Picture (spheres, helix red, strand yellow):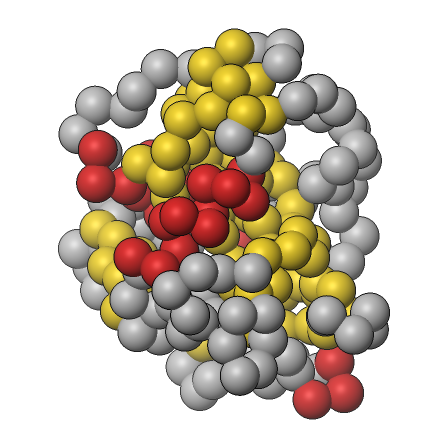
Length: 218
């Protein structure tokens, strides 16, 4: 299990995201985001090398607050060939310099997200070591039903991870709260990851984080 270090980060994650989010095609706020941490979860890297976090932040800069899902991969050295996906670098009080990447372009994060949706991995609490994330719900496809070799494409709706076989795992970046907390999946969906976050008014919202199209349920 990954160990959560309660220490300093310079700059902070929110500082990095404030500069990075407006460059994304799915960002809907003003030029200067007003961010607050609102939820999320972690996944473990079996090799213990990469920190994997699915962070939810709320942005109050636009006419209406928007919650964004930001998968982040933290590494102790640059990841060759993914300069375009670098969110920024920061100094960790325990681990030293860390490179933070948009996790949809990091093969370790994508592999563990696939493991989660196949039922081979468990979502972990964002802030406490060795503790499951109880509010994360997965409808798994079953082991072996998901192909590898993803390409990641951003558009105004989010990020699509597409395999050569035509399977698509779509990550919702601007999250949509489900009515009455009931997540309704689109037709043709074969698996999903859903979770909750804190809205700016202090209430809890729930919605789909990622939806799989293609593959098969076990």
